[in-house]
Length: 568
Image (cartoon, rainbow, N blue to C red):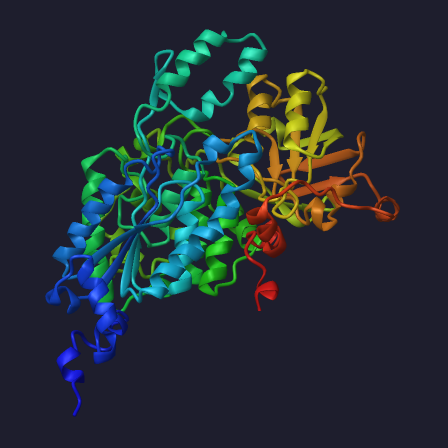
């Protein structure tokens, strides 16, 4: 005699039926009842609502409230929401010290944690709530990897501050204040007061750093609802988007639409175009390639280079321009940006709205203003990010060309070499960097850092001291989205992997040519071969988590992802 029909709570095609159906699942059902579920709940789809709340991080401090709104939407859509959290590390808090080794490494940990909870508990769908830099790509990587119906609800940007009578003040400018104090441009007292006024609300920092670049990219890729990329963190609009996302994920579940149907190569190329049009952070190069890797899609630096030459930079956003992100939201947000560059997009791609991008854009109209320019009269003719190659970067390097003075597009200087960011910072602060210098910071790559730290403290000192007309910086590390100036990162191969940057010496002549996409050094292959003899890479101290990361991570030119060959 079979009792199976007595314990058939939901259709077997639901993943969560593994927990609810069958006489042998008595223990699992008891555990679900212990959380407050009843028999009616067992009949419904289970939806993971995975946040990244942190009291330490302003971009994440409000995410529990957004998660509540998501849960309301899931319930209205006929599902049972179950909340959990993953970690969140603030890049801004990590700037300028060893803590910066951890944010990029946390991206994979976040993706792994989402995979683990979703697969272990057999959720049917999920809504992901990230806020800042590495949490957003980590969750998008998990969405592509797990491939169940999913929507991302970013935390959104904070409002700008008001410093010195400037109501559009952002923390990207504040980062330059230490250099201005050292140069005698402002007083320590002025800086102390500015620190209290710069970040007036919760949310991701108000400028177009990596956090807001990723918020906007989520919408460009079709993984977030319209408006989710730019709606202020403290707005009722953000709460409405969260609630609507809960309902929308239930519709995706009913229609069987999963992230890999959305995150196609065409959609990822649209993502590259969106990054170029907005002037987004160079970190998007790493993150887009990592998302593509998880989605099983090919995406290379060649794609970034090709699109950067074709898609203009149309957004006048800090740090490369004048306005904070909330100004772009008021000017139509990402839909208006995409409408502006629509001729350069594949509009046939699917979105989490269950509509194609083209169908969504039919209802929007771009109204050009000082925040959002036109194709005919853009902020700059090329995209915000450029990819450089040459004998100093055989596998590529990246620069945020939208933030570089045109007078510095071509620059030749003599190398001043440092094996860490701290050493370079000390030299800049001591005033020992001469005009015509190319600062070289190495052993800061994915393996060498380990963790590929951002060199924001160095670039902020350079900009704050007004040295961006006379000095350039190249590194196998990376840069904050707040960075601007002649700063070239992601040099591949990195020093720890034996790339040419490991063998640069003080006084070597380096040529930077952004216009022609080259980064070269006046050192012959024969001389490089001689310098390699007996070479031992610098090995920096590392605890267990970073040691694991350094063992598995690939180069920046492939997105700094976990090396497949080491995982098989």
